[in-house]
Structure formats: C-alpha cells, structure tokens
Length: 113
Length: 113
Image (cartoon, rainbow over all chains, first blue to last red; front, side, top):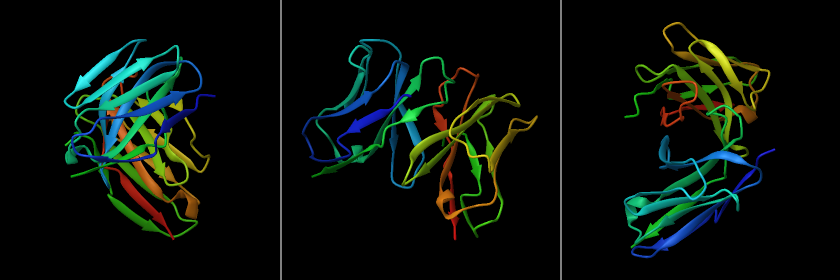
C-alpha cells in the first residue's frame, strides 16, 4: 500500500531564506504532484512530475523527483510572505486511476518578514 | 476561479441525516473526482466518474455514494451521517479519464452536529 510522508509538517521561515520540503513515498509511483492550499481555500495544482530526474520550476518554487530514492523535493528560494500556505505532495500508485492520489499530511509554511 | 463549481459552500446537519453535495465540472471536462479533507484523515480520494460511469474508488464508505449525470454534473450523497463525517469535500475535474485532477472546486464544508 502506497504511503506518502512529508516533512517538515510545520515550517516557519524568514523572508529571503531558502528551504526544502521533502516528500517520501513507500512504493513505486508513476507520478508525483504538488499542490498549494491557502487557508479556507481549495487546492491549486503546482507541479506534476512524471519521470525520474524531472525538475520543474515556477517562480521561487522548484520541484524535483528521484524515483529511485522515492523522494520528491519542493525547494523554496528567497521566500516571500505570499508563499505562506500549506503545501501537499501526492503520489499516484502505479496503474491506479489518475485521481486516486495518496496525499501527504501537508507542510504548513509561514513566511515572516 | 478554477471553473469547478460546488454547492452548497457550507452545510450543517444532524447525525443520522442524509445530504447531497453537488459539483459542476469545468466546461468540457468529462472526469469528476471527489475528495474528503478532514483533520483526522487528511486528504483522501473518494471516487472518480468519467462521462457518467464510475472509474475508480478510493476510501469511500458504504454510506456514501455518487453519480454523474448526462449533463456531467456530479452529486455525492452522504447518508446516516456521523460526527466523524464532518469535513471539507472537494471535487475536481479533468478533460479525460487519464487527466490530472488539476482544477478543484472551492469545497463544501460539512458539519455534522
């Protein structure tokens, strides 16, 4: 059974600093997703990572995937307050439906001035 | 605005009751996914429909059922409600059965008292 573990679960950062959120998954998965959720809001898709070594960047966020290590990372560069949110990674079990995602518990990021 | 519409936004009901949550997917999207977000269980995939047919089931309780209608809107029916069913219920849509659930509705917050 696929399990997804994120760490840290809480992250308080200062503006301008860099940090990485880690997402480990327990069995093979053929794709990895990152989502953002603002308080009381819906999920916003950030990245879909499809293959080993995949790297995607959008603004100050960069996601990567290492399928051999069963690890994805979300790197935050020079954090700004607007990045404060909860970030979820989710993995799709091999052969499963696209929507049958197993989510991590989320990392609540707070960026302080 | 993701283009996915969910109604109602909030629902308060008593234990033992039955409720129906509604989701209208983005125009042109044939696939609808339902997710539950609770403090205890986190984000969980419930069920997927594609063009009116069930395509995948996740951790959906037997007391819960869903359907997708010819106009592609979907309803999630929750019956014999328990306190533990209190959660945020999201639907997401995608163009095809293999599509990424990238567009989520704003959710229905269900409170069972």
